[in-house]
Length: 306
Image (cartoon, rainbow, N blue to C red; front, side, top):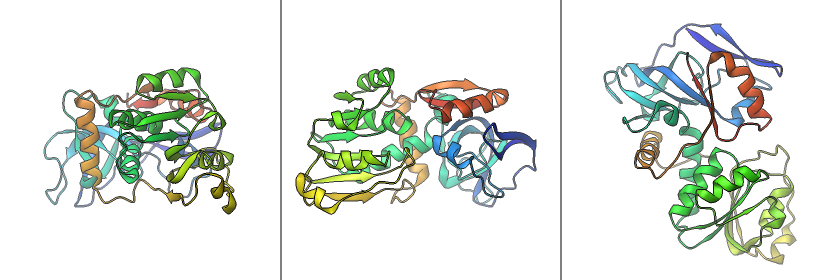
């Protein structure tokens, strides 16, 4: 089968190669990939790939071989899946606990745009607790996670301030329910009951300064790729006794398949709107990865295997 393999070369981060078709474990289904989406974190990993790395966590397609242990979808079923690797290929073995069926009302392209960003947003808001009536500051809101967090939190009754440097993206976030759009954390008025921070560097300290007393800051990423520095005494200037929480989307008490099914249901009901910034094929992969790395794509980049 065909699959993309990392090269470590920034000019050509992946190459299309012939590899062996995967052999599923008993609890895995073999999925014929019809589309996959790319996450910015995956483009970071392509810079220094480890031996044996195979990119690809967000896929949608058809189950062509059900799991031998009888779990998961049976027969030829449209699914969305979240394997930990190997999804940028014609076929991928996916644990049945990381698959959800796609109804006719959700397209393959929409399905491929859901997993990592949607799971992160869903579980992030669960970690935050009830958000009805709460003021939320969301940094790094331009990406897929920011999109889904804004839409879900606003629908749940939160007052969301989204931070994005992109005016067009800001307008879209406002359409999704953001109460306020700012282009720099320093412009956010505060105080906020909850801060969802994903950029790191100086933005973390600036966001913390806008947190209310006994508020919560959940740190779920470092997209700026710069470490943050905090001063203990800064907490006394406003966010006294605040909680600073680290977040990883895979550290959850709920199952991946259940949460994927929830995202699919919300999409089918028109309550969640996956945003696709570009659709391309095998040949357009290199340019798409470069544009995604350089932030020239708004919304999810989805590749169809044609």
